[in-house]
Amino acid sequence: MSTQVPALLDGLVDDAAVFPPGSATLPDALAAHRQHRTAWYYDLVGPLLIPASTITRGELSGLVDPGEGLVVGVIGDTGIESLPFALSSLAPHSVTARQVEVAVAKRGEDPLPGLADLLRVTATMRGLEAVYAELPLTFGLMGALDALAAARADGVPIAAKFRTGGLAAELFPTPTELAAVICACRDRNLPFKLTAGLHEAVRHLDPATGFTHHGYANVLAATLAAAEGDGVQAVAELLTVADPRPLLERTSGRLDAPRPLWVGFGSCSILEPLTDLIRLGLVNGGHDA
Image (cartoon, rainbow, N blue to C red; front, side, top):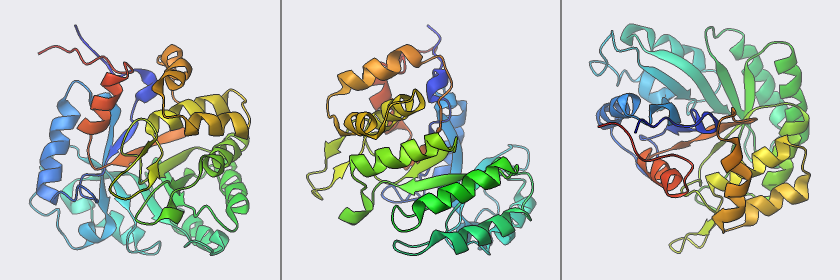
């Protein structure tokens, strides 16, 4: 039986193999990404995410065949102003950047000045499908979302990005906080991406750290609920549950429709989320040999 990833899950998982906790070497990450892009589940996989610092240090040299058409996402680990140089450094390697992602503020900082800088720099970067402004879930968030929505209305391909985990408890938003952000993006018709902490499909406690992680199946169900008009409380309830059944009730009947609002997330493993999605029945694991 031939299996395709359903439209609801198209491009859900960007390949973040070089980032922690996987921290693959760039040659290993490239080799694995090529396998993902030719596998039966390739529709699930987004671009390979590469730090801007890796690009500007010339680490792609000799690793990419000019004819292979490698598509990447650039993570602005060296800041907003360095993004154009990182993109220009891809050209000698025949690599195309689909998106860039960069933090515009630290927690507690006003995100508007950094967002203004990113919008200015974005005007100089051509050919990108998306620019993701990572916003802290603290001071000034709603004003920043308003600014992003206004820029999109003017034709700028910019969207939001939020952190849903990390090495400290405060980096994990509560279900209510994340639900409020999802609904705020819904109200502004603003796409968003998530990063960090989404290691399993369903909400769970990591016994090694004591942190409770959001599940990507929870986020998917919650986003569908928000897109259908549910309020913050109902959306938060879906983010809270550790039982996959209510999540599947929200998602199983919508597999053939495109995913609203939530662009997806990066994972240092592609096979782990794929395995979880197969176990939940959202992806059919059978495929042609």
